[in-house]
Length: 322
Image (cartoon, rainbow, N blue to C red; front, side, top):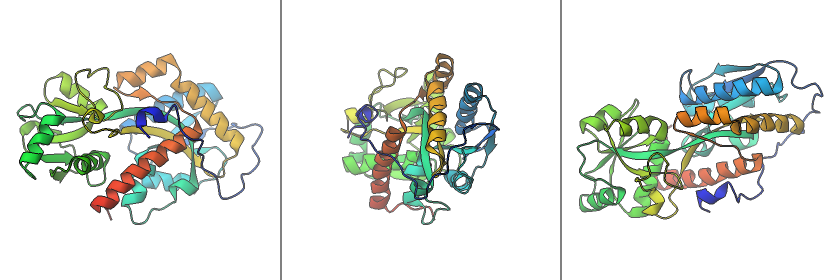
């Protein structure tokens, strides 16, 4: 199924708890709600969690208290929430890759993502932009692939580490096109080396890629979303060159699996209302991202779709981080 049709035509999937849910407290919420974020303060997940927390505080009448628990690509935060009481007062904010990539690349996780946690709500999404330094000769994805076929292994693609989306999507591209490019993993941003010509291309999140593109410091070659990005109308999607190759990065809230259904629905409704708020939508778009509000069943389907793709790539390429 193409990603562009997923949100409109997801099958009715849901994640079910393996233990009985306690009865919902009629006065919920009656105290602050703790939101554990899988990344450090000031990072994009933290920024978006705080945006939604502000709105939900007004909507539900209790504070949403942000607690950052970075480490292990979001695994530590996921484990902390999975081990918390399932009463609706401790929830997780994380990037989707903690559920769609980590189970395939980590030999042992501190929790079972699909069993221990259930979806609450999506919040935002953004695509990845394949960018090159200004001196790189290829000006399009097609030209890049032509060069890669003519010079196997000569072109380098940087990433934010083995198993990161910037790595796996490029491995997917190489699989689909039969090309051989050199992967160069970085612990920090590869952008300085990209602009200096030490590496040729990198898949960069739209939020951080666009300011560089607008300033003329890098060139956009392709966009990973299902449609061209409005800010980059002349940049083709990957799918225009390689059919069905589309992937978005997205964030969301999760809760312990035994959380009462009534609490989950109230949380979902509050977050969905936030995604539909014009002021919050404007703030999200100002960060070169898109508001994303879908049903809990569709959120579960998105996890399964992305996990199937990423899992297949990780297995084919034998990508592990431990």
